[in-house]
Amino acid sequence: MNCNNCGNENVGEVCNKCGMPFSNNSPNTHNQEHPHRGYPPSNEYPPSGHNSHGYPPPHGHHPHGYPPYPPHGYPPHPPPYGYQPQGKSKVAAGLLAILLGYGIHYFYLGYISKGIIQLCMWIGGFIFLIAGFVLFGIAAESESLLMLTVGLIVLLFSSAVLLAARIWELVDGIRILAGNLNVDGKGNPLVQ
View 1 (spheres, one colour):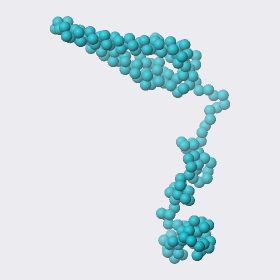
View 2 (cartoon, one colour):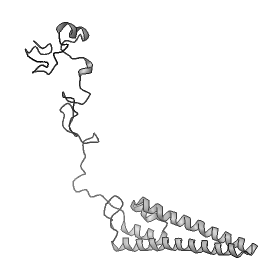
View 3 (cartoon, one colour):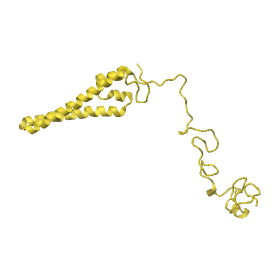
């Protein structure tokens, strides 16, 4: 039996040369379904990007034999010769921690989650501080011992939160200036 695709004479169900199946490969029926002689029906083609056996190409290899490409699809661009990524300033981060606070030094260094935690500590501490003073005012007007006790507990709690946030920032500032914390959030070393 001769293959309609390549003309090779074969014995079996599939052509040994081009791999086209001989079932439904008579000259009349196949050419009537597809006027382009020798091409299999569209449902016999492998999916786009797959090889003739139906498997996708290995990762990083182009399906049509072009040079391999990286996973994101663009060729890699190496940094210029001698390029060193610049980290943030150690002095600026330390001074932000010691003088300003509120987690701004963490935002500056790229540690966003720690910066949010310190900022929330400050905001929560101030909210509880205001609530404690309001409760003290209510206790003074109503002369209620319960309100005075609750106001005192809220004030002590807010003071503890604010003091803990401030000590944390001072310790961070000293660690940054001493060199114990020496990389930013991207892993680049801090510079002077």
